[in-house]
Image (cartoon, rainbow, N blue to C red):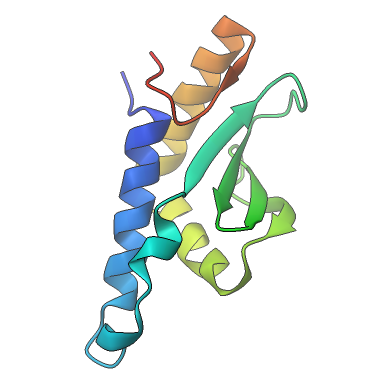
Length: 114
């Protein structure tokens, strides 16, 4: 079985922090900005396979069939999310989560989901 949304969110958070931790930017990273990063799938609001990435006061929705952004904006952090989505296995894990949401016919977020 694939990763949970919580595991995927932690993976995304780590990727963003690592990508920002280059030698030129070490002192300017605000790690606490990503403490509330969440991945949400809400089949009740939208039946199209999607994931909503929420961080700080921003949110964006991504189609998990194509990996494209559908709605919203994450500002400059969006490029990191798109890079994460393009990593091997991420879309497959998100699709597995979506299948679980469809089976449960409900909202699954960062909670410990099956």
